[in-house]
Image (cartoon, rainbow, N blue to C red; front, side):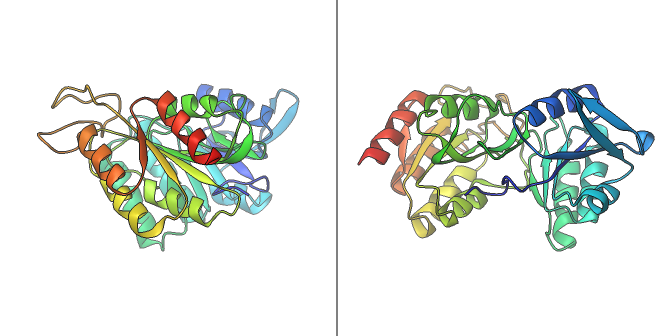
Length: 294
């Protein structure tokens, strides 16, 4: 199986006709994703030829869902318009909204998240500022390269896009049920904990890799959750041991303030919960091999 994204997922792309949207629509289609439409009010009623596949363009998410049965939307929308696109997806009741856009203002992400909660939380939001998610051999929603791994029994949840790719490549011979890049902004829709529980409930996921980074307390909260609720083995890696205090590193949420949010504190919390933590991504991959061969 897989979590959140399966072979039956029908995907639309908000912002498909833009340069980034089109580039990654092409990549998603090539990897086998069922792209059933794009959304652009100014080009509604048109269709776009994507390497021989005619993809219709709809005026709204609601129309696209009505005409195609879409249940996933991937958002390639410029930061000033991302909140409106998220609200549109939420209003339409899409099951999964994958927000790739980087640079979304924190208050916009917060408002969209709160709006979703007020509407009953029917839409699972992944991101913003994330690479999306992939269930290898089934579907790929976002920008994760599809050719670096195959289907298997490891579940992966990560704040970092590039570390997601590296871990998938390091463990490519074992493969993954689903890899989820949740993003590293201060406010995101889906958390480590959400993914950990989903992998715990997935019968085809045997073990979990969790990648975190400095800033905030998400990893400490995940560690507490693992200790109480997760029975499958978890291997971790935390990026940022050498990060200087007070300087944002890569992601908007990756910043150490005083003793808060350090990599050492996160590692300590995870190890206290029984998680094996690698000092490097390669060591974390080696630890996962040991766990699966035990």
